[in-house]
Length: 212
Image 1 (cartoon, rainbow, N blue to C red):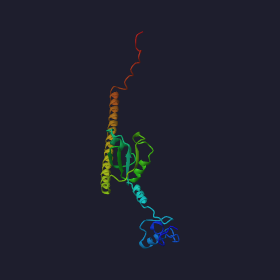
Image 2: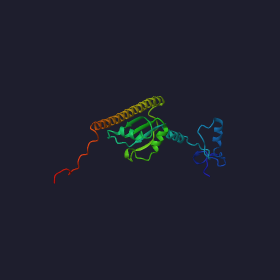
Image 3: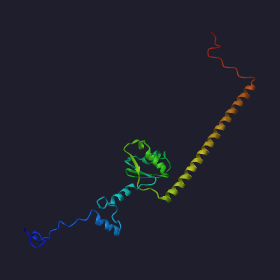
Image 4: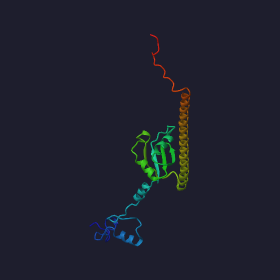
C-alpha cells in the first residue's frame, strides 16, 4: 500500500526491517574491548562507558599539602597580622614558613602532626570565627628548603636555650651575691653591738618619760 519499488517505502527511502535482531546490550562493545582493551574505563550493567573524568577530578580535589594550612578570611588592614598569626600557630609546633597574600595565609609546619593539631583546635583563630583553616594544596617550601629551614630553626632554638641558661645562671649568681651581702651586713651589725657592750637599749615607747 503506497509503496514504490520493492523494499522501499513512500518517498523512496529503504524501510528498516523489523525482523532484524538487535544485538544484546553491550555485546558488540564488549567484543571490541576484548580485542583492543578497555580504553574507556569500566562499564555499567548496560555496557555503557563510565566517565573517568570524575575520578580525575576526585584525585585532583584530594591533593593536599604535606604540612601546610590555608588560612582564609584574614583582616588585611591589621599591621600586626603576621606577628599575631605566628603567636597563634607556634603553640602547636615549629612553623617553618608563613606567607600572606591578601586575605589568605599559608602556614607550613615542620611536621604534619603539628599541622593536624592546629587544624583540629576548636579555638577561633585570632578570636575571629570568620577566619577558616583547611589543608592547602601545595606546600610553601620544597623538601630541600624544608630541610634547610629545619636546620636553621634547630640552631636558632638551640641558641635560645643556651641564652636562657646563661641568663638563669647570671640570675642565680646575683641572688647568691645578694645573700652574701645580707649575711655580711648582719655580721657587721653584730660586731658593732659587741663593741658597745651589748645590745642597744630599746627606744622608749611613745608617751613614756614625759612629765605630767
